[in-house]
Amino acid sequence: MTGKEGAGDIPVGELTPLEAASELQALAKEIARHDKAYYQKDAPLISDAEYDALRRRNDAIEAAFPNLVRKDSPSHRLGAAPATGFAKITHARPMLSLNNAFVDDEVMEFVARVRRFLGLAESVAVALVCEPKIDGLSISLRYERGKFVLGATRGDGTTGEDVTANLKTLNDIPEKLERAPQVLEVRGEVYMTRKDFAALNRSQQAAGEKIFANPRNAAAGSLRQKDPSITATRPLRFFAYAWGELSEPVADTQWRFLERLRHWGFPTNPLGKLFERAEDCLAAYRDLEAKRAKLDYDIDGMVYKVNRLDWQQRLGQVSRAPRWAIAHKFAAEKAMTRIAAIELQVGRTGTLTPVAHLDPVTVGGVVVSRATLHNEDYVAEKDIRVSDTVIVQRAGDVIPQVLEVVKKKRPQGATPFKFPKTCPCPLKTPLVRKAGEAATRCTGEMACPYQQVERLIHFASRDAFDIEGLGEANIQLFFDNGLIKQPADIFKLKTKPQEVTEVVAEWHRLQSAARQAAKGRPETAGAKRKKGEEYKSVSNLFAAIDDR
Ligand code: IVH
Image (cartoon, rainbow, N blue to C red; front, side, top):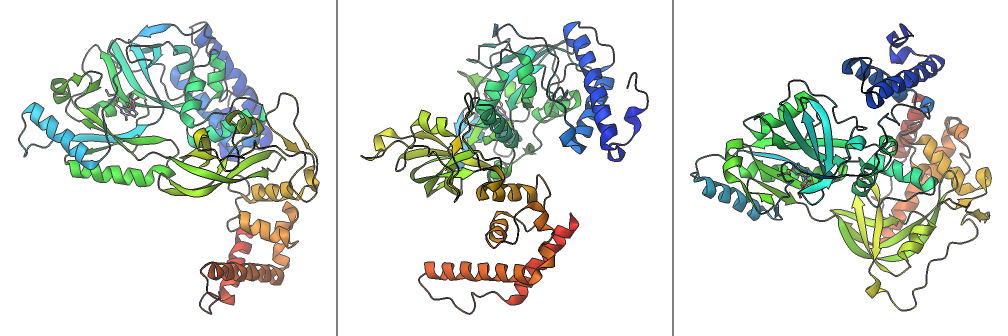
């Protein structure tokens, strides 16, 4: 690193916090200097590789010392010049859409159609590339002599908006390509991970800003910012999967085209597969559907594409969709249900979140019985009331949310939901909502038992101390029994093994009795847990605490 020789040589794992903070400060300054030279003066001072090394070092230190991430961190802000507005761009080749298939037969029919059109016998394999259909927004990136010159949204497929300055802030989009054709247009999907989306909504909420309904909206809103320095703070990502104008062919198959994209530095979806038999594609579709909820980004189906590009060429397109590809859609992750109650949840910093208790409903294969209502404004804007019939949406691990109220199903007498004036906790502390803020907060701070439990849950959670076996239920249990009141008490649990074991055993006994009662039967001997099991789970817990 210039001007600070040797600083970057210490392995990140060996840096002291002081060294890390000082290096992060130097890196922020250094990267800002190069951003300015590159974006504003178009006169880079170092090679792309050297610049990338600086950013990687910065990212690695930030990952190891998350509490030292600076306000002016280069990972938050990139130095693109502000955009003045979005000019309209006519795509050199239209951006097509895809025909949809909803059942296996329609996929088999697609393959049969391809064969008929090409005059292929049944015995000739039609290899297909199968990849997830990303639920983001499609964009086109134009490279001339290997330099990124223009980036546009899809718009209506013929005309989109020039969002070049904003796209330049994405780390997934290379600025320069080695050994690229004179003209190369790369197309793909800009998206946001579910985790990043949830974090963005949390900070939007805390800042009293707009809450996004889903990762796709958040990605679209973030990309269409007038000020690219705001886009730069948003965690946008990109998967490349198609092309527009090309001055020369770059591959002879779809699969090899993806390989070339990766060589140029574009991310392609790691779940993409190549199969010769349609049955294998259908099996991959089912596999993907099973994985869907666990993926960190939204997908809404699988896309099958004829692998041979000469065949794609011959197949051409009908109206706005190619004959050589089809989207096999998943069942919708939305469902209709009724709000049985609205409860206010107190977070660890005292923020109150209204939560809807729903009549259980299956959404995308998972039973959902609660949905977040975000804050007071969200409830008021959508006019969400107890007993309303609502549309709920689930996106993976993100808490399900209420998208809209089906007003015509509203029962008579349903009254608007009123935020209370006091905390639902036993202390009934007054609530406050500061001017300009979306959040309503409990003023009880350390005294509010709900906040205390949330702080303990956070302390033991994966994002903090990561104590296995000390989840929400156990913390609530130990808190209610006076075994832990503050984080330090967790480490004293070991000194009271008898009490801990008794509390855990009693809890299991009550749970099992409740289960039996729900089935209308008295508690059976078989349903009772053995004492040894309690000891085992408690000693596992002590071992996990010792590990910290
Ligand atoms: S291929 C000419 N592959 O889905 C074919 N599209 O509903 C170009 N999409 O407009 C599209 N993931 O925005 C393709 N792996 C993928 C995709 C994908 C998402 C989007 C794309 C397209 C829309 C059609």
